[in-house]
Length: 217
Length: 300
Image (cartoon, rainbow over all chains, first blue to last red; front, side, top):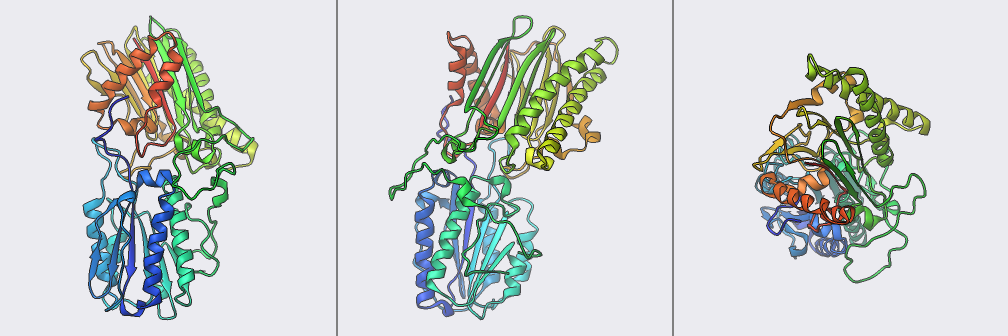
């Protein structure tokens, strides 16, 4: 067969939007850091995910920090610290920019990427305007996001916002490090199955049942 | 969920082979036999037969490494045949998210080729309006395939979408140069000419995103004529190729990789064991390529 060394392969783009505002300080942000590490570790055990998943994180507080989209094997889980506000709008803006830059549509040169997946984790209410960027995200035609999972942690989260943004919206009543750990394990399982069921990306059929302690909104 | 109170979550246990050995080490690709006893398909199938006018028809289908890893069945199907002076090839790619797509793919292949044979007997006279006649031939095949699919869905008490597959049909008269095709969904149908020019014989329905396509059962029969093409190629092609996207998407850009693959196919069919050689053509390794792979080549 031909030498495919420099041929492009189809990728599943996964973006993690991680709230690192001041209210996440302490155990919650430590749990997020550990959770992303576990997510990465679990996905690396899945040979199909290793070949198809490319991943990046967008951490948001009073500003936004975005990592480069890289193949799963090259991803380095971040060590985030918590401080500042909850600029979700900026995060969504950064996400739209990221997809614009990263997504490869089908062309005569390559089969293109699968629709991206987005996982959002937040514990509070946005302190900037986010609705416009959420609308831009929804109305994308190229790099159209297949599915957004939005997890809200704690009593102060805006659950309506989660439902407005997420195709699947989940809520945990308290910011519980153990439950965050379970959430990230669930995310890794979901991404793993997403990579093998591209036909189910849009309808969420790749999602296994979330941990029972998470309330589906 | 936005507007739903209840939803069906994916049962992960259905994807895990119970024979997998737990390990703390990184896991590479594994091969597992399917445990589902119903509607089995063999992992690999190959057929090399004489065509008409000295042509050869070679088809092969192999289970993808994803199905092998998770212990599920190959979901592609193909069938080939002749109705002198015509050569016929049908390929179907079962939808990964449809539980019985392997059944649908097989049902459509078998019924369609039988329907095309009937269509040739009924509609092909070869004189006036040959293009219209060939469209009627293909439509006769598609009507038969759809009827068979409906019957199978009814028999099993399932919705048509449970049996979803794409459709590629190639009908070729080497003597007169007629080529009639039908395509619903992804995959490709090509003619390779003597100067290595690649001629697309149909239009794939693939979206801007990988994994997007449509299926035979999705399309209203009144719209089928829009998925048919009739060509008359006076310069005989050296090869006609039909491939599911499991192969076709790996060969982008086509101008670079399809001629190389055509050479490998030509080499394979001249070997002392062409069936084994053809299967080997499909057993290449490419990261990110894990789907079932099926191709049919009509070789001059």
